[in-house]
Amino acid sequence: MSWTDFQNTHAVGDVIEGVVTSTVPFGSFVEYAGVTGLAHEQQLPVGTTVSVRILAIDPQQQRFSLAQA
Image (cartoon, rainbow, N blue to C red):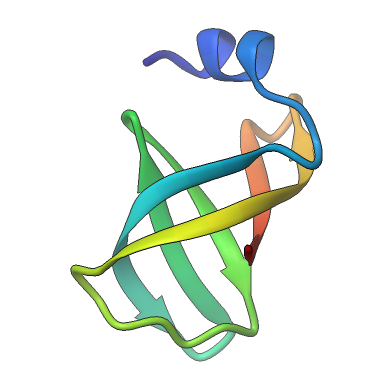
């Protein structure tokens, strides 16, 4: 899925399922359909599938913020 497709089909508040690709000191990166978002301040196990809620979408930076659903 391209970034444009993602932002055209998803909105703040949507719950999606993604795979945790990496964990950093400030959170975990979750990949969903080829785009990656950050679950800020959440240390999720790498490689697991998680349900996350979209908290914010930033079209200019092409990134989105997540929280565990």
